Length: 91
Length: 361
Image (tube, rainbow over all chains, first blue to last red; front, top):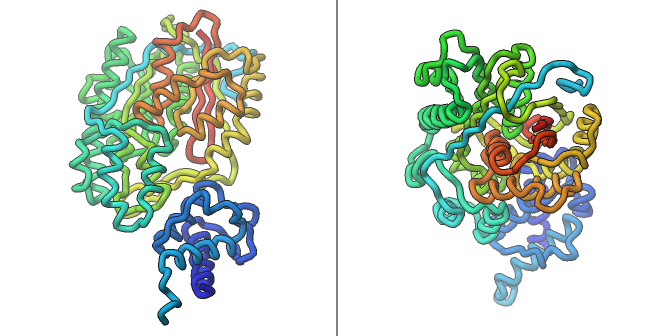
C-alpha cells in the first residue's frame, strides 16, 4: 500500500506539473486547492489521470475529506487495494 | 478609452438585419457521445465520467459541417482545413445573401466586409472568395480577422461600427463563420479537448450594419468597450500543432467572468450615463453553462434575462464568434423591443478579453 501511495504521489506530481502547467514543487502536504491552485477542470484532469494510471474509479463521494496530495494518494491506494482483495493474502 | 461617450457627436450606425445559418448535418449529444466513446476508451478508464462531462455542458446536439461518419477520415490539418474552406465559403455565402435580402440590399450596396473566424485559415480569405461568388463591387474593402475567438462576434460589431462612424454613408457586413467540428483533434484525448468536443458547434451569422447617414431602420450601436485581462494568455486559445488547432481551455473562464464583468459593464454603462437597471435587453455570448451563470450572478440579472442565450446553447452549442450574433438575431426579431430601449451585447474570448457593445432601439 505504501508503494502505491508513493506511486500515486509521483503521478499527481507529474499530472499537475506536465498537464496542468503548474510551475513549482508539489509536496504530499500541499493542499490541492490552496497550494496547487487547482480549479474544477484541474481536479477533473487529475482524477481522470489517476483513474487511467491505476485503473480505479474515483467518485465525488470519495473526494469528501480529500484536501492534500497525500489524502488523494491514500484514496487511490485504498481503491487499488479494494479492487485487488487478494493482494497480500497470497504473496 | 471607449469608442464613443455620451458627449461624442459621432453618429451611430444601425443594425439593419442579422442572417443565421447552420450546416444541414445534425447530431444529438447522445449520437456524438456514441461516436466518440470508442475513441475515448483507447486511453480512458472511466468513460461514464467523460459522458457526464459531455452532458454537463447542457447542449442537446450540434449541427456539423460534414456528415458525422466523414470525420474519422480527416487525419491531417490539410484535410480538415480544405473541408473548412469549402464549407465555410458555402455557409458564409448563404448567410450573407440571407442578411442582405432581409435588409433589402444587394452585394453591390456593400462597401466593407468584415470576416471573422478562428476555426480555419485561407488566403485569399473567405471574404475574397465571396467577392467572386456574390458579385461585390471591385472597390469593396475587406478586413479578415483571425484569432479573436468567441469574442469576435461582439468585437466585429464594434470594429464595423467604428468604421461606419468614419464613413457614415456606407454599408458594412460582419460575417462570423465557425466550423468548430473541423478543429477537433481526435488524437487529443485530454479533458479540455473532450469538453470542447461536447460544447462547440458549427454555424455562421451575418450582420448588415449601415452608417448613420444611410438612414436605415434598426437599433443603433451607440458605443463599445474592449477590455483586456493582462497575463491570461493560457486561459483559452489554440496550441497550433502538426495536426491543426489543439484547444487550450481553462476553468478560469467562468471565474474571470464572475470577477470582472460587473465592474466592466458598470464602468462602460456609466460612460453613457446609464446603469444596469436601464438595460432591458442582454445579448450574451453562449460560452457555456458556467459562463452564463457567471453573467447572471455577477450582473444580478432578472430570471430569464439570458433566456435566448440559454436556448441557443441548448439547441446548437457554443458557435464561437457566431453565437452572440445568433442571440442578437433572435433578440432583434423576437424581443418586442420598443424605441428607446437599451441593450448590451457582450462576449469574451482568448486574450483573455471581453467586448461590450451598447445598442439603442
